[in-house]
Length: 288
Image (cartoon, rainbow, N blue to C red; front, side):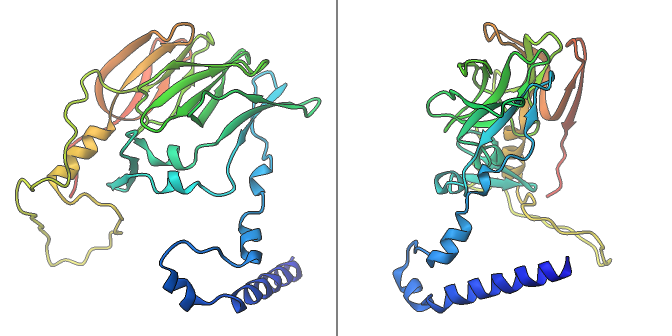
């Protein structure tokens, strides 16, 4: 094993050395724009690792498997989309969801027959990418989060013919990011936008007061974290983004039953029959 690692490391050094021998950093800086890397580096980075299948998500009857069709690299349009980091959490500020759902979304979805290894496409609605997926308990449906430019959708697909329909919009996946089937394979539990979202706080607006920092002279062994809150406005914005409500959504007609109060929900674990819910929430005051 040690010999293999040494050979691999040597090969990587030779590859990089050869590539950078043709690389003129002064010319790149003078360009002041995106520059294509040496071909050997480009080929290594763009190697189609995303076509590997890691086991996927198997259906409850163990006959089929979900395969997400991903990109080799995260598209720049997704990576550069407007976002904000608050209290260590990264949010897509356009669609108001967890940013990872945007940047790690897949461009397509397939189903594989485990016996024949045959694969076929799920027809994802135009303009949407694919987020978290889940098999229904009866293995007859696949639910997935539709990642849109400005909204987040609940979609349900037929794994046999690949047809898909949008069941609901307005999902609020900032704290809790899951979709969970109930045992009847007819309803899904997730979190949605509050009926009254309130006014979006402006974190770059005129400050409501000065920044006040208090401490003491004692040495602290606590870690520091990126994205700590600094102002009251940021705290209000975090609460605005995190606020959601538990909902039970019928896949037949998209009818929605709201459960419990609006809150900063970070996790939902429903009973299989939908008669009870374990809900984790975050509460104020925040540290900043």
